[in-house]
Length: 208
Image (cartoon, rainbow, N blue to C red):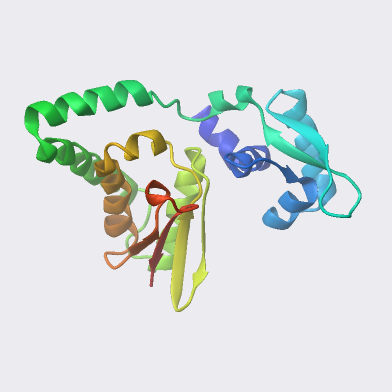
């Protein structure tokens, strides 16, 4: 619970935004969060003091050098730990003994249980765009960098990071968890238009 509160704070949001990036300046983050560069710098000073980010001077084109911040290895402890090798080994055994259907059944069950829990905190009577916003809030609180923006006549949910990225390549059934959550919690008509697993820059889902 303490970790969830951290990710809801401005410092937690900065840490989440920096995950998977080579670096961002205070101006970049200020524009992203709608805050002043000075307000962002104050948070970065604390994060740097705590050993979670490190700043480095870089030159962007012909402009004067600016400081870009990136996460340190110490920041990894804030995110869910991925035991990729063990998980992959377990799933190989399940596939060998029960076939592809056994692996799929595991993630179908996980998706339905997760969706059921989320329905307790996300009002199904809300419009789909509002449910999408609530879901991205939950995802961010768990350490997944996600956002929702208007797209055409509807909206788009984008996950910029995946805690199971190293498992999906060998066991694509893992993705069915988020598919089930999207369909049952946000909208049955939502469609995935981009995937980290297939070389995309993010996992993107579009709905109306």
